[in-house]
Length: 327
Image (cartoon, rainbow, N blue to C red; front, top):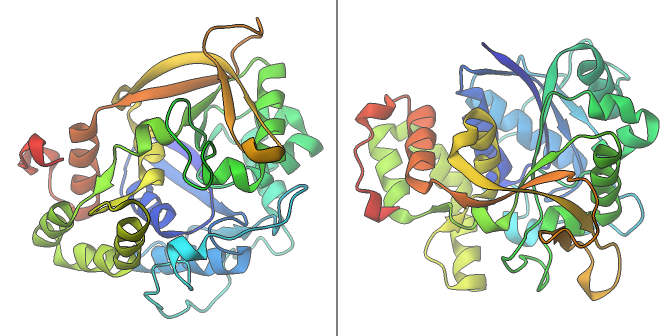
């Protein structure tokens, strides 16, 4: 049965790859894309989402601009990681036209509220949680009405990617992340936290990229164009040959929950000081609070790559014949 989903994101290179995976997955219907300030400023993010939709021949999907700054702290983009245009300095042409036909004046919060309350809809959050937090302030019942919420963000035992302890999405707007986790917990719901513990295992290597290009030169060429900058960044930053593509794993986890495993726990988010943005996961239940999250710690990496390569290239999964040792 097809699942309806809204993707809240901040495109971003890996957000774009995640959108491609979602749009090529028949199990889900992307009802809309809401954009938040994060990797790129909001208007740039809207434009980048449209560029991906154009490549995928899916400009029917509405793109709605959301919050342009975090709840409390100063906005800090990640263009050093994603390039001056947010898409790896590919400088793809802007796509003309209305990003959200028929939705003039509708905010991201309005769109989320309407679809989550009345549409039997799930939410995949790939950026800072500012849009979700604004919805929690306006109508917490709407947020809790989501059939599922999968968030790419946070970390349990892995180190941070923008500070020693914090993952970027939650560091960018820690107040929003904390509010959303607390709101969901107070209403008896859990967020599926796809954090750095598992996303760091998903490394797009030169070999995988070349294999994708052999399977489908058009898709492989597009992915190569937007990830080249990302490859260079990861080499400079981590001496990694390849690039970590965090966000597609959150989409894959929504498509097939068996790809990941972990545990339920109460999770809080630090909002200030040197630990700002850190997810504090009460794995040992010191606080005796009901779980508000499922924290993932293990991933089936070969199964992810077979899904990702198959969906993006159009080659049946059973024909993806790639030695697991190369993942």
